[in-house]
Image (cartoon, rainbow, N blue to C red):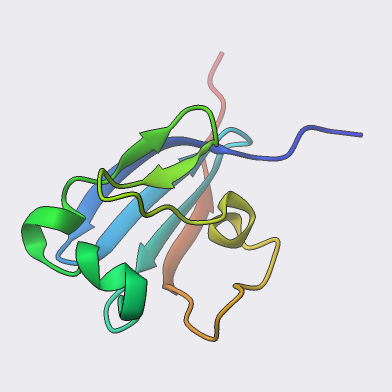
Length: 98
């Protein structure tokens, strides 16, 4: 059984957009516009959202406010627990160079 893909890198690409690079080489650009309500509202400002980073223990995107997302949902392997999911903007794989 292969290891589950986890977040290796995250980059802010827009007001509520992230580029997420996974350990298996998958790159997903995700738009969180309009889904940051309820407990997620604490990261629905430019300053708060821009503080996104990688939680190396959980292998996912997290924020200092205690918010994180299931890496399997971000990778596209599982459905979110709520009806709100980030919109996939673009998906591609990194090419391996020798």
